[in-house]
Structures are given as structure tokens and as C-alpha cells.
Image 1 (cartoon, rainbow, N blue to C red):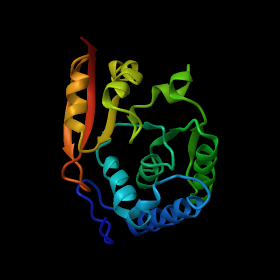
Image 2 (image 1 turned 30 degrees about the vertical axis):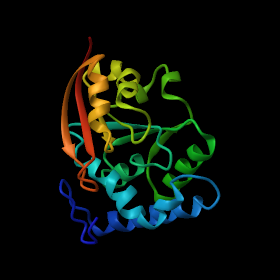
Image 3 (image 1 turned 120 degrees about the horizontal axis):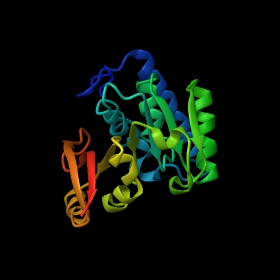
Length: 205
């Protein structure tokens, strides 16, 4: 991400860049005590994690009012998206207590209004989390599993935004054996071999 705040889909102002830098420091500090990001990616945190997450903010429909980041971990992409678009209601779902606590403390430190649920998504039975307009999940599970987990949401008109690495094509082909998928593909700004799948419709085969 250029220091000027230039991204393909969005422009960042100085306050947003400063907040993203502050958030990066929080991740690195916490990473000394437990694993939030791979140690090998710490020096590349800006591109590998912050920029990689920030590009998703520009893919959220303009009429969306809320999003839910599932398996949020360090808050990537959830907290990054919230920093960039504070108008969105933000729900972060993370079952591991240490990580959920980090999300809560980081949101408080950054002055962000978010809801953190320390729970597995499939165990959430009702409430606004299940009604979020957009679902994001980064490095959570293969696409076939994501579509099964979020099938009711997508069938009800919500969309899924799922970054995928170099194996994206295999994951997509595997998923197509079980689902009729209405989707768009966007090339990642941080790795031209990676894609972001925007799933807009779903039916079981």
C-alpha cells in the first residue's frame, strides 16, 4: 500500500493510514506472546496483511450496511475494513479466546465500535451477526466448506467475499461439483496469482 494511501478501489486519508499503522504495531506486539500472524511475515505485515485486507473494503457494495468477518483471528480483514469504512456495522467471529480478547482490546485502543463473538459461526443461532449484508473469511477453510457454512446467508441475498491464494482455481472447481455458484473474480493487488471470489448467489446441485 503506497504511503499516499493509493489503492486500486479506494483512497485512504492520513487518519486511516495512521490507524492502520497503529493497528499493525498492536499485532506485532501481541505476536510476541502468541501466534496472530506467521513470524516469517512480520516484516511484510503492510503488504501481506494490511494491504491484502484493505483491498476488500473497496469490494463491499455501496448499499451494504454491515459485514461479518468469520475466523477473524488478528482482525484481518475485519478490523482493517472497519478502519477504512467506519459507517459499516462490524461483527467479528473468533472462537479462540486469546484472539477474541485481542480483537476487543485492539478495537478499544483504536476507538472502533465493533461486536466480537467468541464462538464458532455455526453455533450462532440468531441475532444481527447472521443478518450481516456481507461475509468475509480470509484463510479460514477451502471454498467448498465456506459455501456450505454460509449457504443460507448467500441464498438470502447476502454476499461472500473470500480471498484465495494460488490454489483458487482448484478450490473453485471442487466447489462447483456441489454448488451452482454466481460469482465474480477479482485479481488480488498483492499477488497476481491470487484471486478474490465475490459470491453473489448459490444453489445446491
